[in-house]
Length: 250
Image (tube, rainbow, N blue to C red; front, side, top):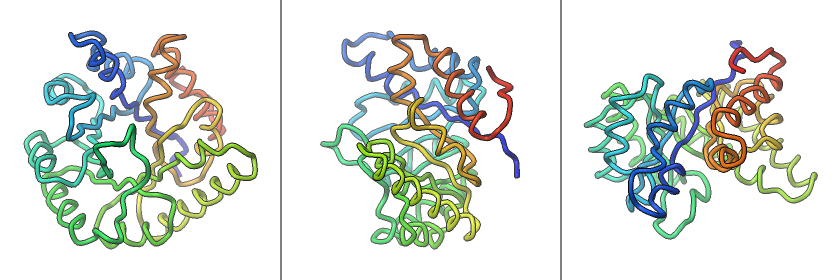
């Protein structure tokens, strides 16, 4: 097994700060370039229906001007499908989206939408986009993800990160471990993310078989205090430590 764990840095909330006041600062593209310099393996952005953070212009610039692979998070709507087919990002992660939510609240209900999701997976795959599905660590949802034809899943780690007791966190961690093993047995690539911080990342990073962690909000928040490059380098070091390797990107 390749022991190196990839880090995808989500730059959405750089745009959130920019949009709070308007104008052009801070610039998500600059954040993506700094993330690359700090050792990120990919850039993640979520183009939402209401464009509350990343804009179409941001997406255009990211596609054209970054060297790292871009993973576009998007809802299963025709509008987003057309945008993805126009840009053909290297990766697309299908996520649930509700207009009233502050952030993504959980994984896709693939079970109830498997036919619809299968069509998105097929169409995007035909355009050479690598498709993953953002799902809860639930074995039935993973089975449905496999049935959809998606080659990968991203496990929602929010419940694990939000746990308020050690017992609750350990239970959620074991669910993620079991979900990872089940997905790998089916032949799916496994990624994980949502809510991960310096305090919570190592147990997830240590799970054998997870290939990538996608982290955004915490890193952007931490950048206020330490700077983005320092925050990413520290996260990279913690991830590598959990895998028992000396960080090559610190």
